[in-house]
Amino acid sequence: MNSEARQLRQTLIFLRTSFEAIQHSIAGRLDDPLPCWLDASLLAMLSRELDRCQQQAEPLCADSGRQLSVAAEHCDRLLKQCPGVLSSTLCHRQLAAILLPLGHAVACLERPTKKRRWPWQRR
Image (cartoon, rainbow, N blue to C red):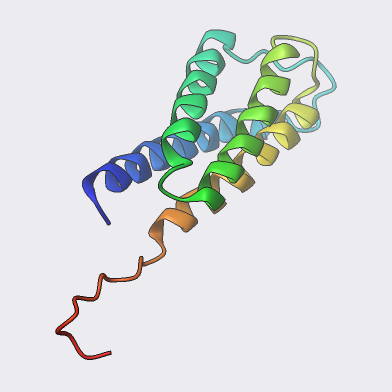
């Protein structure tokens, strides 16, 4: 894995951990019918970072780029409804919809790449 892919993987792990922390912060209020009040500025920052990572991932791993596109779409949808439109339960589900493709994108980058073979090496 080259340094660019390693840096992207670390950023994706940071994003996944951030979304998980947000999701866990509302987990205690899942049965609460009141609106969920997330920090829209934090979500906006994470959304921008997801978009940046998607553009960076496409040339490195097409599968990862597609998964990040799905995660970014869900994040944009959540951001449009935030704050105060969704109940805690729906917000939790929307965060899960972001985390699933984000986890797949990280896994895609962790797959070993084919090693380059030189002409003098045995196959």
